[in-house]
Amino acid sequence: MSTPHVLKTLSLDFEDTSLVAKRRRRMVWTQRTRHLVQLGFALFIIASSIAHNLAVVDGATPSIDALCPFGGIETLWTTVSSGGQFIPKTHVSNLVLLAGLVVGTLIAGGAFCGWVCPFGAVQDLMTGVRKRLRLPEVQVSPRVDRVLRYGRYVALAIILYQTITTVKLWFADIDPYRTLFSLGWLFEFNIANWLAYAAVLFILGTTLFIERGFCRYACPLGGAISLLGNFSLLRIRRSDASCKGCAVCQTPCPVKLPVATADTVSPNCIGCLACVEACPRKGALEVKLAPAWLDPFRKPHTAQPGAVAPHQE
Image 1: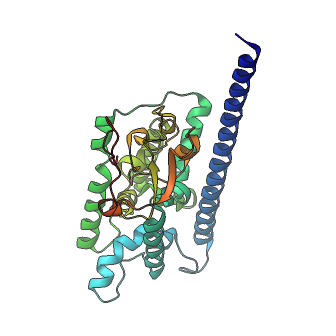
Image 2 (image 1 turned 120 degrees about the vertical axis):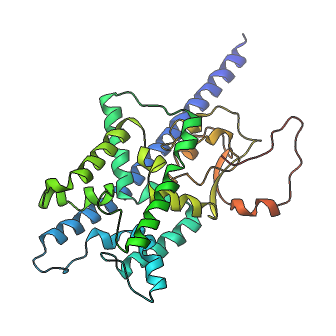
């Protein structure tokens, strides 16, 4: 092998190594930023819950029931149909937060789940614990995963039906987010709430081995966000022309989406951006202002011989 060829090879190897190192640094900083944002929201909820539990005057400070957008979904029908009445424990703040969530989802899809939701942050923490302890991760097969994801919609439908018919927060007694972040287990532990305690322990134990298990299979708010996310303006798009099919993008995805085979990443995406940062090919995977619902109206591109038609996973 000639000296110029050897030097060229070494130069290319150094360039590839440099690009990999740069990509890894970008991934680290993006995820650190995300975790700091999650921590900020979680601390705000915890501080609000502590203030509520320590308040001398009843109702002086809001409970976390009033600080959750899902409460807006639960009370929406009753509030509209009754001319302004709210389901007990909900407040106008729930509707304001719901409105903000709707706007945010229509812009950025499921980013609330990946950047804001405190219970999502707890699940990410459980994943960190598993990795630190080097415990095995339970891999759910794609076929089973597709079926289990419908659990969120079933949970959403049951909760809304029961809430509308009983005119109370039917899910509140076993809501893992409320059980954990209300701090009732700390300030007023009551064995009568054993079912709620057991539910949150079961979910935390499950998410220790199945990454974001509650998000993927049981979260009713996540189900609502996923449905609305179909209309979001910003979507992660994969370019067949730039993609080399390495599937590196799928490895860091916390909700285990088939990113490497999708033209448009599923609305089940939580917007963590791990896949985009992991992709080694420029332009192969990008966040674009390109809503999927406009696809039928876009000018179709000329397909290359043997090319597979684009699809959404």
